[in-house]
Image (tube, rainbow over all chains, first blue to last red):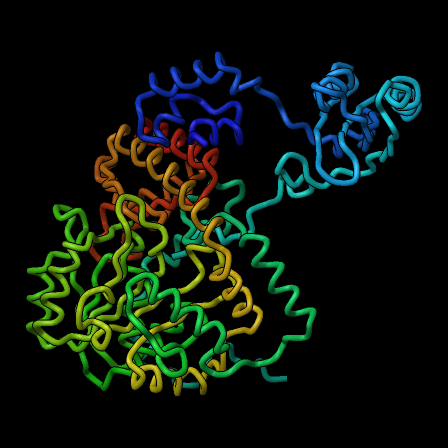
Length: 162
Length: 392
C-alpha cells in the first residue's frame, strides 16, 4: 500500500505537510495523491475510533455478530441477498465468508430488544436465508488493530539513556 | 551508644575511581526529577517487542524452561545466528565454538576486551561513541586511543585519522556503525578504505553492528563481507534495537574460536549464561521477526525525514543520519554549550535530549536527539524547541 495511505490509515488527521516531510516529497504531491484517492473512492471517509469501553455507562448500545446461512441465487450468487441485508442502517458490517456459514453480519442497536427484533423480524424471515446464529458482544479488547485497554499506557522507559 | 560513621572505611578500586566521570550524570538526575517531559533522550526503541516473540518466551517458560543454558548459549540459537550471518555476508561460523551468546552487546564488549588485552595494550575508539567503550577498555587494563570524527567529515571516520592512530601500535579498534550517537553509517566503498588500513596494520576490528537492520539509504554491509576479515574481526550484534528487545538482554559475538574460548572463560565465571527466556525470544525473532522489524524501520525512517527537516529549518544543522535512530545536532546557534542547552530546554520547555559531551569530549556544540518516540511526541518537541530558540 502507498505510504500516504498507510499514514492516513493510522492517523486520519495527519497533516499533509507532515506527511510530505516524513516521506521526503513535496506537499503538493501529497495533496494531489489524497485528492485522487478520495475521488476514486479509495479513501471512503475519515472516521474516529471511539473507545466504547470507556463510554459504556454513558452511552449504552448493543452489538451483535450474526452468522447467516444463505442459499445463493442463480446468476447473482450471494451479492443480491447480501445487498438486501447490508442496506439496513442497523448493519455495521457485512462479509461473505468461507466455512460453516456464508455471511457474517455485525448489527448495532440501542438495546438488546431492538437488535433481537431486527434479527427475528427482518433478517431471519428474509427469502433465501436458511438460518442465523446471533452472538451478542460482551466486551471489546481490540478494535481495528488498536488494543483498547492499552490506550493511554505510559511509556515505562527511563526518560534518558545512553 | 556511639554514633556510627557514614564514612566508608575501605579503600576502593583506584582503577574504577580513575575512570573519567560521566559528564551528564547530573543532567540525567535532573531529568528524572521532572514530570510531563517529552523525551527525545532515550537510547532504545519505543516499540514493544513484537507479540509473537513475547508469546514464544511465555510458552517456553510455561513448559518449564527456567534453567541455566550452556555457557555459550543454546546451540539452537547459535545455529540460527550462524545462519543469519551466512545469509548476510556468506561467511560461515561454526556454532559450536565460534559464537557466544551474551547479556547484550555491552557484556560482549566487556568480555572481549578482557579476553584480548594485556596491560597497556592500546585500543582505538572512534568518537563520538556509545558511552561505555573507552571505560571498558580501561577496565580491561588497556589504553583508549580516541579518534575524533569531525563535523566537516559529517562525523564519518577519516581514514587518514585512523592511519595516524594505527601507527601508535594499537591492537584493536572499536568501530560501531550505524552509530550511536551520530547515526553515521558507511557504504561498502567507504568501508573498503577503512578495512584497507585495518589490514595494513593488522589490527583486530571489534565491529559493533547492533543497529545494522536500521540502515535507511543503502544496504548495510558488514565488515565480515570483506575478504580476509573473518579472522581479524570480532562481530558484535544482538536483538535489542532491530527487534525492540532491549530488556531481554541478548547479544552475541562471532569470532575466531580462540577469542570465543577466552571470552567464554570470563563469561562463564562472571555471568554463567544469558537468560534462557531471552534466548528463546531471540530464536523466535530470528525465525519470524523480519516483518515487524521492517515495519519498525519504515516508521523510524519517516520520523528521521521529518525530524531532520524540522531541525534544519529552525537553523540547527543536522546531517541526515543513515542509520540507527538518532540525530547528532549542532546547537551552536543557541550560543549555549550542550549541557546548558539541554538543561535550559528541559527546564523551560520540558523536552529532554542528551548533551553531546556524553559521547565525546568534543561534543560541546552538539546534542543527541532520539527519534525512538512517537510521531506526535516528536512533532510537539520540535514545536517546543523552535519556540525555545526564539526565546533565546
